[in-house]
Image (cartoon, rainbow, N blue to C red; front, side, top):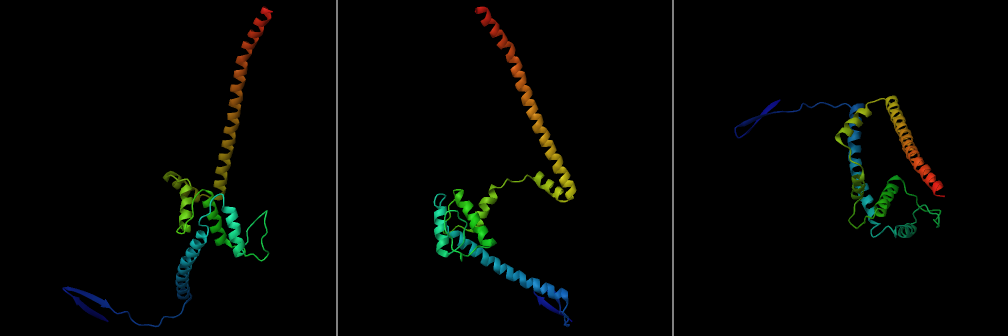
Amino acid sequence: MTTKKIEGKRVHEVIETPKFEVKATKLLEAVKTLNTLDKVAKTQKTAIDGFCNDLVREFSGFTEKTYTTKMRAMFDKSNLYYKTKNGVVRSDALKMTQTAQTVVSTTKRYILAGQEVTAKTSYSEIKEYFRKLLPQLSENRKLLNKEIALMSDSKVTHMIALLRQSEKTEKVNGIIEAETVKAKKLKAKKPLIQKSKGRMAKAS
């Protein structure tokens, strides 16, 4: 059924969607389930980000010199497990799983690098700090990486083997060249030493 709506001088045709019974299919069920999981994942990510920030900010005021002492005191108070050579950790101490362990480890690296954690520092800021320290790839290198990604494992392995052999050859050639130069210098010094000895013999 088609109806018309007039807005000013424009006429829009609106087609009503015919009603029919939607049968349950595996495709429909899969899409609905994934849509639901996407919403859950988004909610979970927001919650995880918040808890990561909370964990980071617990290290506020820590420095390179005080990190170990303060960390142990803080973990002991909360009965959290940590590796130690000179200390005692309770047998029932809670061990951290991947996410918490990664956040603590990254925060430690951040502090030991001389950076300061404040009550406003976020985990994303810390990750961004380390990301900026990574070497920036040139456009040419990015194109090469894409090309390498399309190659088979055997080709990449062969390329690396050739590269290593080339580096090894260059290293050997460098050593040979250095020894050759050294030998030439020694050879050039011998006549001078012999002349010096001859003069000393005549003088005596």
